[in-house]
Image (cartoon, rainbow, N blue to C red; front, side, top):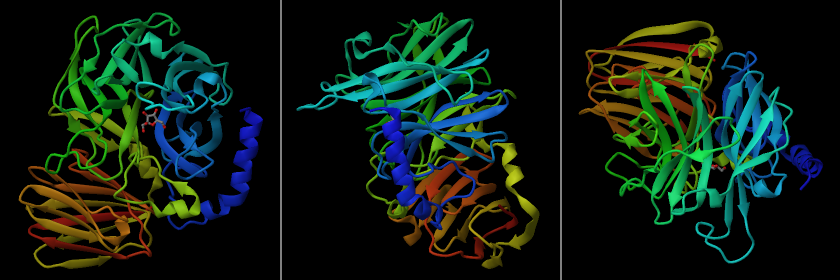
Length: 475
Ligand code: FRU
């Protein structure tokens, strides 16, 4: 379909639904959301000419996630984002059923975008072995707003013969004078893996490695792979589908995490270490990283999970669904990837903080919240057991080396997620009108979740042993 026809439909949708989106009490204040309709993966993250760009999977025509476009948000400071509307449309044969996920690579004065063009054929198909095309497509831009013609670089027949038709989500980077691309894939015998391609000119790509992954207990498909170095170590982040739950691990329908790996010198083989979930909450998937001009490795994730059926997002009644996470800096500590909210988010703090010292031996109620948009820091001293309650029915507890997040009615089906952890000495919470991002021990573990409260609960309740210093800023 032509862009002008898409624009007409999107404008119609906007005039019918934009007011109900913008007037929703659950609309967030400082998170990237689609202006209308549905958002999923962050795409094409980069810093270019002094601005941060976050493109994203966007279905403007329905809050349930239909045909995918790329939306676009820009920021000068990683804290305040401005939406720029649709960037890429599904307007060629090779992407007619969706401009799927991809990445940005900045070179000189140009951004090179690599994404997956999704195509579905009519007829009786399983869309795994027949009926689908997934094409790697390149489009360039000198400003992030205007784009070149699209160029198809790789098609299914270019991928190894034992791959199914699910091969997607290119992430491109440069190393030692060569360009590399990872793709997530599903083999014909239903094993998740990644493919690594190499190029000298960004246009011609050759398979460089044996597919990495194909493990027995690691799912049938790996989506959105991303590899990068932290502190000299290779990190592979990806979103596997089809892993079985194991106690408190892998409780979401699809997983998301990382493994420390090692490439050999020619990048022909990648060894993958233990898989670690990167976020323990209900709503986190398909993250993407980029390196900014300060040399930081920054991640943004989708605060949602595909095909999640056990919980709901009531915002669909107001024609929108999902959001992205705050930007978080990735740091390697003790061979673990820590996520730390980028320091620029401190600019969201309004006025002075409210600070309290609390003994935890008796239950204390602090009446400190004026709205649901705040940052809360709690530092625990001599405490190996505590419970914290906020936002009506959200309970955070630590006991017997288990940290739990529990939600009641406001979770709309989200009940409990937990992680085994030696000690918890600090909790930092970024709260928005319908989301919580909870960082333990300065980013050692993170829980991201949506939460839908009927009203503002002003109280923070604390009990346990030891004491706590509580500090809160309004946002
Ligand atoms: C991950 C994903 C990607 C795909 C995109 C489509 O959430 O399924 O693999 O490119 O979303 O929207």
